[in-house]
Image (cartoon, rainbow, N blue to C red; front, side, top):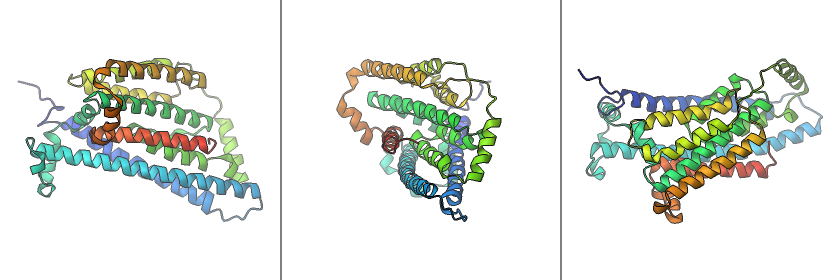
Length: 337
């Protein structure tokens, strides 16, 4: 008796569960972070009922409010872009499943709960999305660059969280969101959190309580493991993805990469600036190696063309990478945080 494959069409329970879990977890993390930031903004920036004669405090709050509004705008653009690309991927996937020979014959008006269930079980949504990311040379280059950007944004976020001594309860939703959605949305929201947590806008009473809490946290085990090994493993697996897209190990490799992206948030790795600079150099070498391997099918025009016709999966990552770069530029322009 054959053992059913629950990752294959017709019985794709595992793939469907993964995809739905991603969607619900993303919605939960987005709501949780947004509500927390909104509450903090009302309390610290808008809702301070105690009038203060400290002009420096007032100026600092006004300046932080302007920065927060900019990052909120960027987060909104990121979320809207991602939502559009993901929705279009799902719609096109459903239409193709309905009429494989000619998707234009499909109609969303035919959608029902039963057809929706059949579509999710009779297709491989999770795997198809991942394969679309590396289906050709331009897509593979964008995907490698985007996930490398995700890696370094994750390192930066983890660095800031350590320096500000954010606890697990504050970071949990940010880490979850960074694992599910492309990184620019999480980065913009985290920058808002950093501005709201800045010592220069806190009331003196709450600042002294925070200092006492931080002193209690100082007795921690210092991280010892180097960042280089996970950096090399991530880049090597990204390099291997295009050639393994038809292999059964492909999905496992995607999940392995996601596990690596979590590591900076553990307290095992050293996140010193010298380590990060070395990692950037190594990642740049892997990017050049991938471009060299794919050079026969790669040129500037088809790389840029992928932003428009590379498929909605890769467009979600590629445009997010560009938005992540914009967030980094705004961060530098604003003098850091």
